[in-house]
Length: 189
Picture: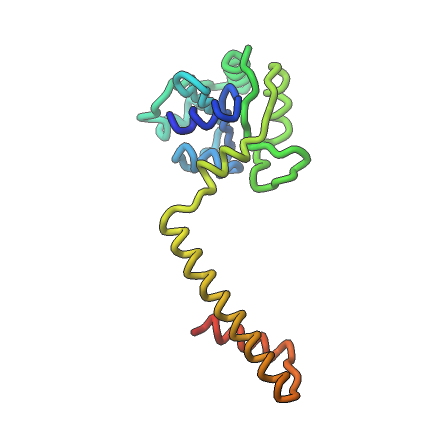
């Protein structure tokens, strides 16, 4: 939470509002460490203070041990009321939103939810920088895997170019099929 709040402050935001419904926002679920749920939830990680979750009353099990405040709702009207209360007077908030769907991997919040949040007077900003920091960053294992794969791809490309050069020196042509086979062989090795 402290790292998230520090990043939110650095971006001059009032918080990061995470939203999910039926797993349509994998960023939210992964950042919070939650499974996909069948009911909507919102989590506000404010720049300062305690995180607040608005969760459905019939889906409380995943929230046991939640580190912040939990405000359960039952009806959609109660959800909207709790959300309006939580967001009233807030400054700009980050959401999984990308203007004109410019970064589709980040653009996960439905237009209707954005309209609801904006109707309270909240300015919505993209969470792309937060997503890069807290969701998309490679683990040590992921980096090691990438480095292994990049070595294999580089070696296969060099092998293919070497074979093309050798064929041209002999006055032969290198077909797309023969080069493809060389690359596949390099990958297989």
